[in-house]
Image 1 (cartoon, rainbow, N blue to C red):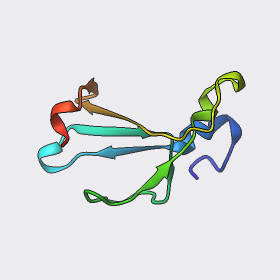
Image 2: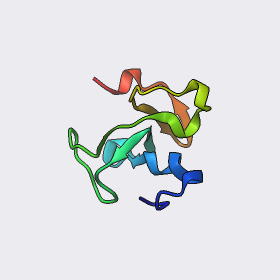
Image 3: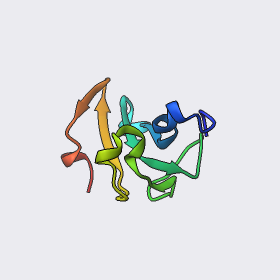
Amino acid sequence: MPFGGDKKQKCADQAARIDGTGQWQGFYAIITTVILTKYGGEVSAGEKIGYAGNIECALESSQQSNTNYIQMQLFHSGKPIDPTNHFI
């Protein structure tokens, strides 16, 4: 864990940034509420990097649930873009 389990940084421990290369140069993806099983290095399509986590760290206790999910955002040149046409 990059933040060593520090409660104030718990959400930061549940995210990954993947930078694009080749035809994806300039793109990057942010994946949140993922419990990582791999840190650093290159990844390939279909490679497992973690599993869905719970967003408890960002919610008030009255809003929390036991539902696990991930959120993915795609950026190009630092601006968020709609990923619909970029993924199958």
